[in-house]
Image 1: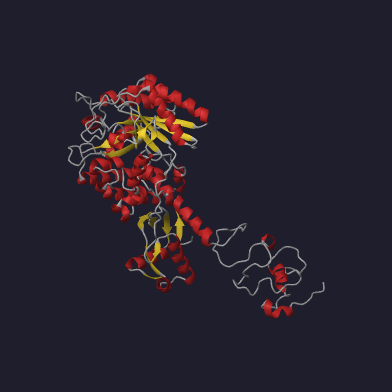
Image 2: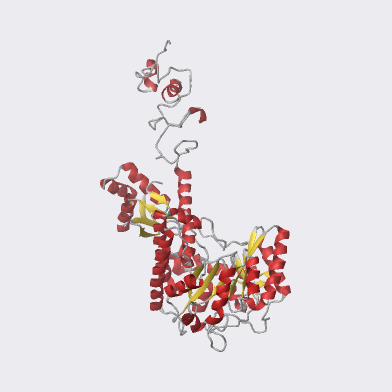
Length: 475
Length: 113
């Protein structure tokens, strides 16, 4: 049998060689003999018998060499001539809904310049649609969630906006209604929300705590950074308003971990300083970062050089995470824990995220969209909560977003975790949700390689830490 | 797998699949993860008879035919009190003249306790 290398990414951690197999997502530590076999095939494909003889000539026993080659073939690190054929799995025709993101309002009291809902690259077409969701629409949304969730035993609602807390009265009504409906059906339900923090009040905090509603606060770090783009309509920064309210929230809300979500822009990319402020000075449980979604010509866009700089900063902070993990301590840089969780499961994605599958967004008008980022956009409407899903459009969206439809991704080793990247980012950049996000490929590979090495180090020196990732997080 | 060590959950599934596909059935063995070589099943009472498919040398010559082979296994490898001479204490030499059961079975003689 003629053998050739199949697809994998080779990396070293704690002085040992590892393989990250593609597309399965399996991570194996390899011994010296396997390493030698891989090096030989890397030179050129060759016959299995010739490879065996070379390994034996190098000092291995026939039985060891034979087992070693068999294992490399069985794990699909090696392939017979022509390579392995990847099965083409179509998007499932019916996928039970797990999470509904309800935009209680599309109104906001801030005017962050980079906002994807109101900024220069917005996809929403809110003209003539309600600005605040009505109770009737909200109830229909909840009914829709339970209907589409089919046999699922637990579902999730995320409240979103606009600024979510501008419609706090409706939030409470939705919680009451959905909790009753869940109890009738014997289903568990939980909640989270995203807020800019400006409208938090003691009674709201008390309510969120009592109902174990998870909170993510969008803010960009210390005052001088946060106030660059997160401003009120009159241009005044929001930090001084938010900071005391967030401290109050973090002091009192003890039923769910509270996270901060940072948008990195051209002027705001001092990752470590932002992390230290949010984690250690304000006291968030975890902090996640994402570069702003924008067309490349905006003033706040981060160019390629800037992205490399951000990756270098991410790396520094990720090593800090590793040091914490090796001591068995919680760090809080959630970009790392999210990636480690995916690597630990060894997931291999057909689609970049759950949008349009297990997760849907619904706008104040009741229009359904793939996720919260497409809410109120006529072009991306996938139905209405009163009428149900437009399954033809949903299938079209999913078919378009499938990894097999992305030609550029076919030779990339990072595709099991990336699958082409965010639909919304792709739409803003390329006008097509199914386009691969080619502008950050190097970033994704760099980041995945870094997290693989950190994963390998933790697996070597403190494997029990990985138990945190045994349960797969619900999408 | 011995040359590749499964690290994450997916790798463990690949490893399990590989073992289930190509590995020997080692149910109820004390050390299921030991290197898989041709072997006796541990304990004849758990094996579906007749025939153990391979003998201790990996061949078929020592299978339960001819019939002496049955005696031989109860004698040499089984602690179970069987109707055969007792290898451990009284008759350690009983099969010493029987190098291959298929040819030398006549050399296994009767014993008179």
